[in-house]
Amino acid sequence: FIHVHNRLYLALYDAEQAEIMARHELKLNFLVVPLPKNDTSCDVGEDNEFFKPSSLTEIFKFDEMACTLERKNPTMKLVFCTGVHRPSQVRIAFLVGCHMIMSHGIGFEETHLSFKHFHGLFDRVAPAADGNAVSVSNCWRALCRAKCLNWIDFRKVVAGEREDVPCICMDEYMHYASTLNGDIHLVVPGEFLLFDAPSGSVGSAPWVDEGGRRRFGAAFYADLFEYLGVVLVVR
Image 1 (tube, rainbow, N blue to C red):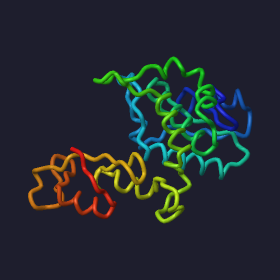
Image 2 (cartoon, rainbow, N blue to C red; image 1 turned 180 degrees about the vertical axis):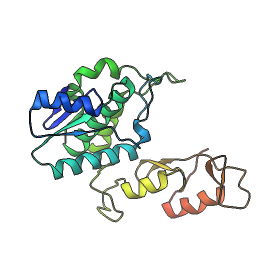
Image 3 (cartoon, one colour; image 1 turned 120 degrees about the vertical axis):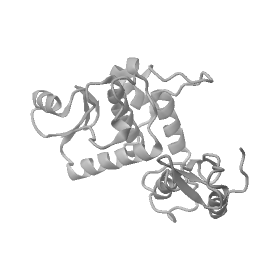
């Protein structure tokens, strides 16, 4: 049972055990936040021992949920259940840290120090072919940097706000990041995005659904990139 920051706590248990521990540690005035039952971002399984970064969409939705709970329960301590399996514990700790960075204005060093009990777990990262495995600390540093550069601001949700500042609009980002709408991921607003190569199996259609997946043709991306102002594609 760990106090992370201000009113934020982590319980390395399931919801039932977390409730018992919260009563023992905090006595009163707390709210236990269970693991999302239908959230695949937390469905990590026992056999997956390595950290896999959450998508920006997952980070945004968790932050939005946490902000809503804080707003609706202004005097209560929030106890986030992590479950008993290490991958789930690391993922929830990572998401709470992202929430601290994005909505509490906490910098990387303080965020990292707040999770000192997790540092041993944070070091377990999936091996990468090029040797550049991604860790929790790497992701937090990147998020802090992107926020500092005004690339990401979770308060900017609707397109048209603060157009003078190059910033990711989360509604637009989540729309195009969906596998149904192109699976396009904006990395640097107004500068750089990533997408899968067009499929040659769609024929003249803009897209087709096959094998449980939507595949997009070159015509789909050409029209979309014109709308987005893309001037150069590197394959």
